[in-house]
Image 1 (tube, helix red, strand yellow):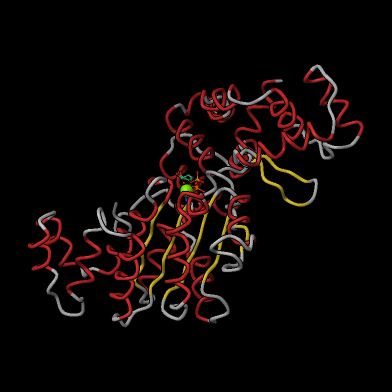
Image 2 (image 1 turned 90 degrees about the horizontal axis):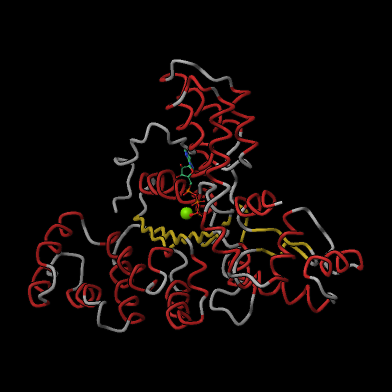
Length: 372
Ligand SMILES: Nc1ncnc2c1ncn2[C@@H]1O[C@H](COP(=O)(O)OP(=O)(O)OP(=O)(O)O)[C@@H](O)[C@H]1O
Ligand SMILES: [Mg+2]
């Protein structure tokens, strides 16, 4: 995966240079060396991290490592080490290593490169077999000899919160702790709930390590940019107002809005209304949602339906009465709190404050509402 803006020739990418600079400027102030940001699914986190923040940091003289742990949920350690290695190994070396691949003796020879200790690179390159915590320490020692600061971007960082990755997470935290001046970290994720747990629970490795804040969402200027782009190519232009209407109807979700634009481009003569209807029908009716639904217990389905429809107090007498009617038996506070707990554990909902919950995936919420 190539991560620089040479690939970013995507004409539809709405650049957010100011936001990128704002994150980097905060690091320059040294108020914190790590930040956590969250937003719901499909809101543009990854696109921003890869196509705005990554190149902006590089332009400021950072070495940059990006990893998306979602792709390697079982082996986040390997993914993270690979990203660090990509950031640290000089360009010329990469080709050499790729050619050499496995035989360690040859890699050893290749590792005799100024500025990089032979042993450390070797440890890094043999991560398939060696102790990951050790490999991490060795890789970061290579970094210690660089003049540049490192920006480590960990996308879908909540994967690190899993019990099975606890050892590596502790090692990572320890290694980063002693390098607050030279390594800045951005944690991003779509599960607010899990990220909160990661930073707010004293038993967790990243307790109190990074302030967690919402990722600023795309809004009117993104719509204006996209509609302008569309109008420069389309026979039948759209107005900004039509664009905003579609954006709102699609719950201000950039991914869905782009699908609407694509649909409109292909079937312009059918009009914006038809493109919107088509988009809504396709994005809010994923069979994936049906599967998720089928796996849920009746009480969980009832509770999430109530949340989707805007119910606020699950535990009130009226709330429990409604819940009871839906599941066909008496519901107690225990029924609703157990369901809420299971839904949170499955990352279906997030707790915002006491008694206040939100469905993590707005498309799923809409799908539930549409079930009627
Ligand atoms: N700045 C942008 N310019 C143009 N399109 C964008 C932008 N940000 C997001 N999009 C569109 O929205 C889609 C989803 O964005 P992205 O994958 O970054 O979301 P995400 O928040 O990382 O979602 P997830 O939590 O599912 O990983 C992109 O594939 C792209 O089509
Ligand atoms: Mg993403």
